[in-house]
Length: 336
Ligand code: XIL
Image (cartoon, rainbow, N blue to C red; front, side, top):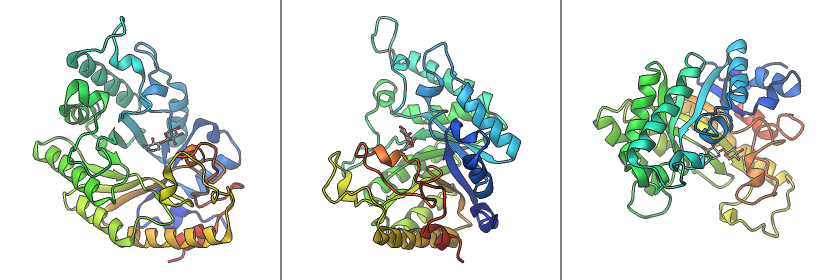
């Protein structure tokens, strides 16, 4: 059977996968990508640290390889990401003497970075996560994460990043992307942030819900509330980094728990299948609002969750197992 996720979902939304360049060499992984998916995101290769490690040096090769694969095989490509507090090189914030740069210098560097990267992949990339994770977690009232961008530039770094990206590629869809978007307090803050941008006429076209979830969250209701709330602003919604960890949310400390056996039990398999079934029922129900769903990696062979939040704790968050075979969750997702 060569019918893939993308075929089941052709009347709904695109189905994407986060990739690293090594997967794209001819072989089982590239085959799986091509049978199952019609969209890709670079898992790391387009982030500022990897692609722009020094002020006057860009590392284009890994990202170029991904873009060439997408274009050659007719897959959509999402760009991830232009402005984030993680995986951002230190040079960006410091001068030759190691002192923190001024607002003007940082803005000029950010603009140059955005122009260079967006320009290079113009035509290949149809949507960019312009700003990633700018809103803090927790119950505080502060809308802005105290990142270096915020500390040096102030809140307008967000608006300006979108304006630069739009200037560089007026045809690209520009997204604000974040996690924990089902948390009521954080969702409200993101909503206020995005609404504020729209009210100012800032070019923003969508909100990315990362979708780093677990067997225990989100509930159907929380998910629906997020989708409808952001769509009510007239924005596109995408699920940009979907995975369903088999570990309970409270196991988010960096300590491994006795119960974390690094074993994919039948119970986890069943629970995960039921959870994915619920998630995709909601996505399908809101297909008029959702334009893409992207998985954060190809199969359980590789997942960033193997090292997050607990280093070296194997997780099993995806639809394909460590041998790239469909799991029970896969069959629930395509049964409708
Ligand atoms: C992760 C990658 O998957 C890892 O390989 C890397 O070490 C750290 O970043 N939110 C995001 C993604 O927006 O960029 C992150 O990706 C996962 C959380």
